Amino acid sequence: MAVEALPATAVSTTPDHEPQGRFKKFLPQYVAISPFFVLFAIFGAFPVLFSIYISFHSWNGIGEMKWVGLEQYTYLFTDPQFWAAIGNTLIIWVLSTVPMLFLALVIANALHNTVRFRGFYRVAYFIPNITSVVAVTMVFGSIFSNNFGLLNAFLQSVGLNKIEWLSQPWGIQVAIASIVTWRWVGYNAIIFLAGLQAISADVYEAAKVDGASSVQTFFRITVPMLRPVILFTAITSTIGGLQIFTESQVLLGDTGGPGGAGTTIVTYLYKSAFVDNQFGYGAAVGWALFVLIALFSIINWRLVGGREKS
Amino acid sequence: MTPENTARTRTIIGHVLLMAGVAISIFPFYWMVVMASNTTADIFAYPPRLVIGSHLFENMGRVLDNIDFFGAMMITLIASTGVTVLVLFFDSLAAFAFAKYEFPGRNLLFGILLATFMIPSQLALVPSFVTLAEFGWIGSLKALIIPGAANAFGIFWMRQYARGAIPDELIHAAQVDGAGFFRQYWTVGLPILRPGLAFLGIFTFISVWNDYLWPLIVMTDPNRITLQVALQQLNGIYSTDYSMVMAGALMSVIPLIGVFIIGGRHFIADLAAGAMKF
Image (tube, rainbow over all chains, first blue to last red; front, top):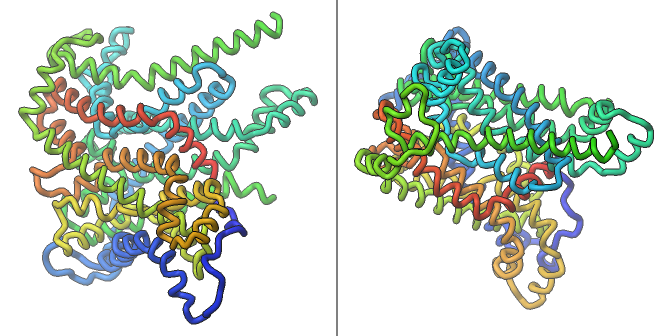
């Protein structure tokens, strides 16, 4: 996230006269910004520090906290369920993000070249994103349902066999990924469209004059010019993808379905802390999630943004 | 083919493609209405009924018999409205200060604010719950409203907006008239920030309305749960009665789509513009 320099024209409150009254002079501004910092201190900074402390303990949330040092973390590293949750999350993330960003780019391109009904299209494509995940997951649950699902009815009607979507790992993961893709395609398309509209028409004119084909234009002009926007969507969808919870929990409950194939990192965190009452372990899973998000954001940054320097 | 014809063909192909996408975007809503308006037996028949039926009100009535739908909706409405009002006030006030005034430590404080974006909210899940339990807030509306009353995203977004929208001259003029900081915010800043506030307001309202994980954890009293949690309970307990479950889902989604259709167009434009500024 590149933040521009602050404007040189910012208003200085009153002419300087008494240096010792500096703080008092700016008191209103500090008061104005304080609600966020106070709330962040209580519900952000303190919990983050406190979660380190909790993660060094064995604690059921009510009784005595028992110091166990790094035990939660050493257990974490050897916990097959935790690694399975990471694996599931990454599979669902790839299954959802790749088609999502590809389709978003296609839709954005089509919208960019369309003059009529653009307002209608934008609203229609955006509605999935504002709708409750719980309600949407319930609808998709019925579509993917093993016995009476719409998808299976369709497969049968074209002469294919039914698929037990919600009984096998890949079926569960496809179902969750399709909910995520469906919800976020329109959002990303609209972000891409804004990026496309910011590219000057002159650049395309020049390419046309030089005889560039549309494929060349796409890869030599559109993609490089869109790089900051692609970085934004890649990072936001990575962070979102690693935090998937509701789709899995509503579709499959706390267990993640047969074989736990729908258990994501956050589902596992929720289950550890709030179902099994292992608060210390839940806090440790939270830190693993933080490390993963940081890692993937850096990788994204390098892949999409970093090349600009060379 | 003449170039004109090719251009026309391309436009038509473009519209066909876009309409297919719209159909996929809208279909689950249509299917929700179909399920909510038929009997469960009709939906589970093969081939399934694909048209809207006549049992909608009957199914909705059964939702009201089985869960305290309006109670849950009221809690959700109070929480969403409460968070939205507080966020609009606190975020715009902070954004106004950050955007238009110089004060010692401003850049550092703004940097800290931006750095907080990096922290995934789930990291604070366990300790925040413990903290709120310590305050005795678990199960109360305070747990839903207070932690979300000001946020970094809103301040960042409003600051970007305020920098471009509020002319320094107006602030100077207000200062000459003897207005203090808060009066400048109220009379100069706030009216100009109104379109930006509309976006932030809809965004916040929708986010809180749809939130699931946090209310699932903190609203421990079964008689005081939010709409999303109530909906999932309906789904978990009565999953064999699909028509009723879907009637509940439909009832929960209608108010939101209403809010969105009122302010949707501007909302989308603002969202796109905001993303470009990151």
